[in-house]
Length: 176
Picture (cartoon, rainbow, N blue to C red):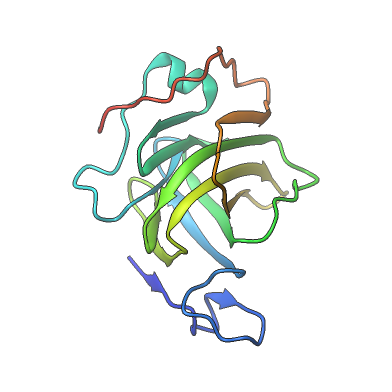
């Protein structure tokens, strides 16, 4: 597990202005995916991963306060991850699946799979967390964008054929 700090040149690209977090920055890394999911959660949670019901599986995510797991395109293998903190959401052109959920971020979040994790400094508070995923010829990728919001809502922005969401979206999961 790694803690990416704002001053780490390999982890965060930032404008020249000094900040105390990675707000306004982009962080890139790779994780090994197992069980077809990637999670974003508060590292202080005792049981950070979520249980999945059929409805969670069909909508592509399993959500509870300070923890969300997203279904990846592949069940296993390496995935390239990019997280953008702050700014405005701009949809990625070659996205296959895109989901937005509310996320109450603490001062750091963990982005993890069942076998790999990274901890990232974040601006604390209420946000919209966007999950986008697709694949290049090399391997799958996902982009997470965390944007402050006073009224975040859950929604499916782009649904690939593997998703079969029912509405209203299920916004209640149990710890795994």
